[in-house]
Length: 254
Length: 197
Image (cartoon, rainbow over all chains, first blue to last red; front, side, top):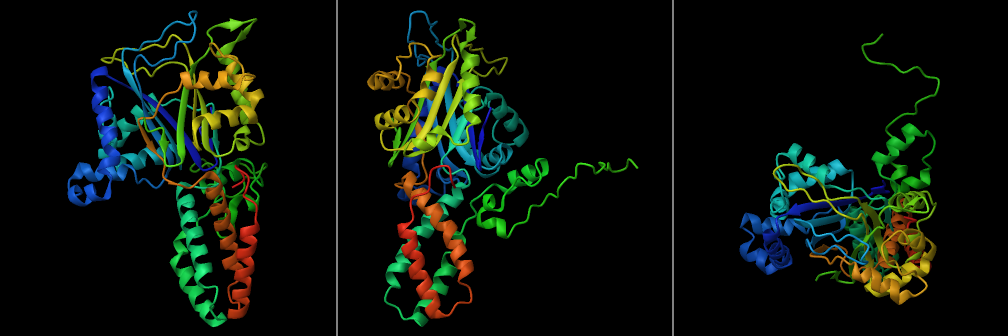
């Protein structure tokens, strides 16, 4: 099992749905991009569920995600020797690539867009609702299937890092273009304004602090400064080394 | 079917795994063993497949069992799920996968039902397409940005932070000269390798 690639977590889940509900789910998914359009949001954004659908497509911690309906008759039958699969239910497959830990992700779904989650999974059997969180976590764990192999092309970058870096690159090239003919003094002033404007786009690629802490705890000295990226210069590892010969102290067990 | 969103394609294929064993080799177990060994490679074979943002292989043993009152579903076969988000179109990507890692594909898919081999590319493409699960709703937040664009942007971000640190307190003339030099080096820098950031 390998659901983690650097900062990215690969989440996969199959949830059963009664066959007659599938057209409603299709209709819902078909409506999400339309309802997320600016004009629809301006006109109907005051409706709670309309706003929830837009939020669904604006989660900042997701790289890529997709939902697919697995019809009961979908299962490929490629040989006469292969027994034919025809499930009693249709299934909703959800694959997501997000940053953070599993619990953080499901917590965020529950806390930020419970209505969006309810709209997607309410058609699935025994879905308890996105709130309260504990039954929701239990349900997700039961329907999740782990990756055997997982790959990310930019394991040191969170989704926010990617968004910010794209913004920064566009802004940087625009700045280079418009500052080409400025005098040094004018350039220095423009530069300071530019730095102020892009200060939220500087990101922090490199290993996740959570992973760094555990890696340093388990394998002291294994984290190299270059693994930490620019953040490594500023953020010390918060967990100290455990010396091999140091006796473990247990509170209240003197 | 919205498999394509902007320039990115969301692909998934569920291929049935051979049941039982052949000459003492249990197909599902051996397939898992190959995937476990892939995890130990210093560099993923997907780094050699241009435009691949994310990829995964899952072995689907059975459908989740929720218990009463939900009727149980049991699959007759296990399935290998290949899921990926990449730039461009599906057929070109499958061709790139086969070109980049024929040995890995062979080691995995020879445990799947009716695997045609990778020597005939069209046959393998048709095989995966036959097993393709289309996307109902895709979420691809980077719009028209290709993998190369994303990698260059991340590289720029990393170098830019260093540049800002290094130029603090410089005179206006030094700052402008350093900036022009920085931009020139940035333009000339090669695109970082996938997996290196």
